[in-house]
Length: 125
Image (tube, rainbow, N blue to C red):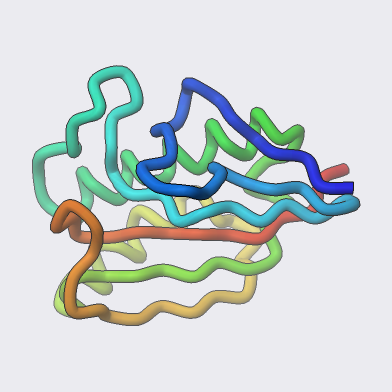
């Protein structure tokens, strides 16, 4: 059975998708970009500022789904510029202390011209 996650503490979907879906004990999130949920605006600043907002959004989805960062098993990270890799990692490692499996790629462009996007898969206990 599939369970949809929808929390106002994370940005609403801007298309025909859910913030996350739980299937059994596995959570699959949609990519989170640095939108501030309360305003709908993009967090203004460099990759550090935007990555922090992405992590806050992911945390809200994880909490609403009944899990947390320590239960993440896989992430996929998208960067607008690979020159931001080290600064992005500095934020990332504060949250993903369990060191889940990860892919990180640079892409030509992200929605709303943001600097990063992250999706993840986690276990729901």
